[in-house]
Length: 458
Image (cartoon, rainbow, N blue to C red; front, side, top):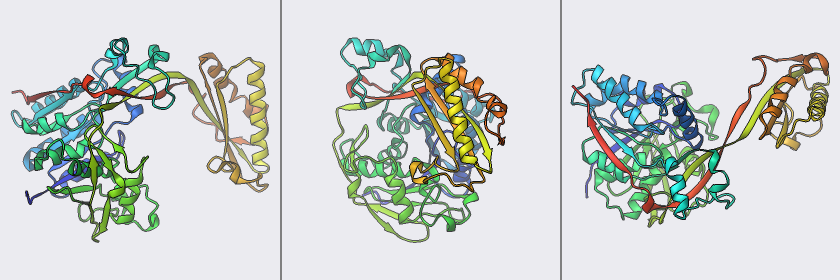
């Protein structure tokens, strides 16, 4: 059995995460791999809209500027980067990274592997015609119900193309909608030579990937565990998976960094976004999270072992986004005395004015922030001594004009409603398109990922 361990560092938990984190992971101690998770379901639709406006866009631009900063480090330290930053324009992302590498004088030293095949937007009509209805996993409705409003459609692909890229000596690997966990367990499969049907070890890799994928959430961020006493949150260290060939691994972080890694915090991350723990389905294996064993070793080290897995399914998940109407949100703040009563009256006035104007909404939601926004009816009756309350008024409609009516009617409440309004700033609320999520399944033999590896040009 291979006795060496590899260190796979998490550098981003989402697009917009701490920009210094991946730099710190590369420079604050030894690592073998840097994984960067940029994509969420809604992110794909945002990137698709960016690309529709500008064909050169559609990927996580932060990734390219990051690579421009750390490429000399990864070459010197022989670190390999795996990121799903390609979004819906993997080729443009690949080209931008290679161009920066050339500008840094790294000719022939950066090999970029680009994984294609997850984007099926243009294939949807053909797939439906051939009987793949892509029914919503939530409602059962066929995709034909909203096909003319679809913005993006991406299948979750697994580890195989990433492993192939590593075999072909790529030191930067860019994917589109790879499953988040594969960014961590693909390097484990490559380094330790795990076969595609080594279900238990791959399932352990999935658990490692799940812990890594949300960044500092596994090292003390967003944690309920003694959160007031977690040291140096301003300098929080992101998690590192220290993996062994037998599938066991240790969750840790660089020494001297802030945050904390212990059993409670790692458990919280394992439970994050978890449905049935016995059936955590990925493209490569079904992991049984109920079999996970955690041992707190102290000194920011938690060992994970005992994970079991079962064969992969014959389907892949498809993440589809579509245009689902319009919304707008606006706020006004009412001051003491009788702050809640004033906000409630403003709510009634605004609703009545919109009704008289003939505005039609699918939903209107009012929150009184500072009184009932977080806990709803648990807040009890209005407090007579509430010093202030924020009226947060939101509308949703298929009719853009109705939403525009609301955006024009909020500000007039300042002088035509209850007294003591403050906190109105930023101008008229903006109409926003609503992007809705449509999860579906597709036969895995319909998805054929392919790989392109290119070295820095001279």
